[in-house]
Length: 242
Image (cartoon, rainbow, N blue to C red):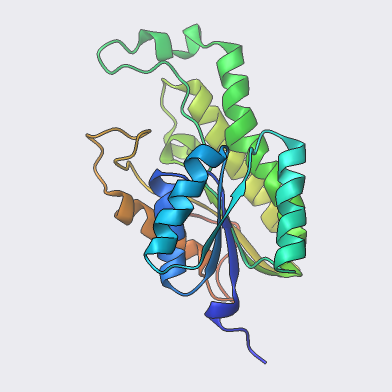
């Protein structure tokens, strides 16, 4: 019997606001059961309740991607509550470089604080790795994983400034490629997605794209068919260079 989209379970990390929240909304609007996760219940539960009031099948679970015990607790919950996972969106991320367009010097790699770089890697790269290590086995050999990356992590177009964020997203892209190779004999697809410059708290009010537009590319990759591409880097459903 073919599984319908309404039987599918998705987990979205970093989903109390912005791209994560909108990704939850768009997935749930397709009839997918979504587990919205956030580092704190104070922010995450109201976000889930907001979507529930709109008639969407959304559940909440606390998740701190930098904490191994927190990741394991989520994996245990998914396994016990649903017995499967079909979609994982690693959206949790931070931008911690001291960037000010009027004074870019503090964001130069010459001024980079290793502690800030380490913190960015811990959330943006290692956090996604932790989650993938424990949740991908719940997919039982089929499903979609999306790592929300950035054009700032493209080696093909690497510029100066903001090294903590750039290094963390480049590392995340490498994680995507490594998982894709080790999963090549399964029906699990894992891809990186750049949502573009989006008007979120991180992107700021002058960004080019709406949250709805940015999330659409993430949802596209999360809903790829079984014969879809794996190990790619995409923006708006189109392949972009690493």
